[in-house]
Length: 158
Image (cartoon, one colour):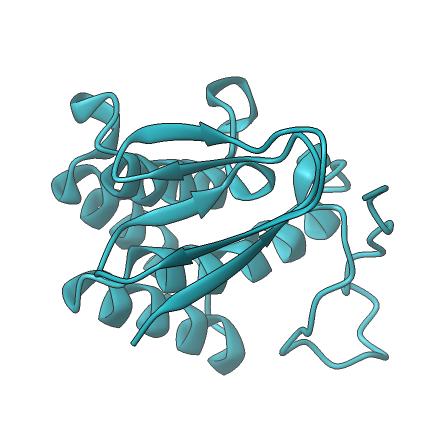
């Protein structure tokens, strides 16, 4: 099964550790084999990995990118997940942690990042921090819309 990516002008993505940058027009890219792909807008920078959930996301991301082995090994991810399991108690958060770990075990690192992205936004609201710049977009959330801890996210300029 092929993956078709619609790329905005100048958009970058990482495919199996290689950086691919689109030209000055919208383009479509078809990936016909299994590959580890992440869009630049989903990449967390090292300086933004300043909280427990962000460190778990960063470790998973680096497994995907095969970058910085000390920070991105599966052992680093498992360590960070153990820390998170010690503090999160709500079932919806445990479900997200379970999903992230399940996806990592199955080799679906990008899907693990998607589960952790929701926790990054929740943690940002909980700690009264700005979410990472690239994460500031409305996304489906498992948190109830009336929750006082639901983060207010801004629509990113495309």
